[in-house]
Image (tube, rainbow, N blue to C red; front, side, top):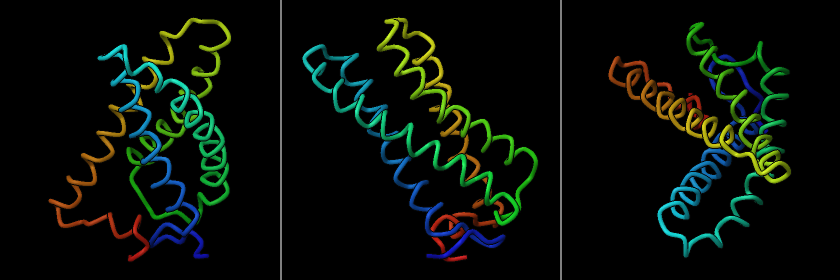
Length: 145
């Protein structure tokens, strides 16, 4: 497996990134679906299962980001802040989802989840911005840089 290096992300980091992105797409789609159509409430159990998986993957990803921080591709302070804000939310959203099951108080889970969604959209927007500027950053996350 390729480790993280300043020119590109390694195999494990890329695996975590794309697996978690796919899981979060599923999470948002299921939550929106059952809120729009009560007959889709059966999606809550797969949503919870994937949420628990995301909690484990998020903890792994944050620990890896800390250990690999000196090997990561160079980025601006804004990029680093954005990534750490996403890491924080990636941990907080599943934790508050579990808390929601225990306490039945779920407002914060939804607020944090939508905060993560908007931050993720900003993340994608910055990829497009860098592409327009001629600074393609996508090869780093595909391991081709």
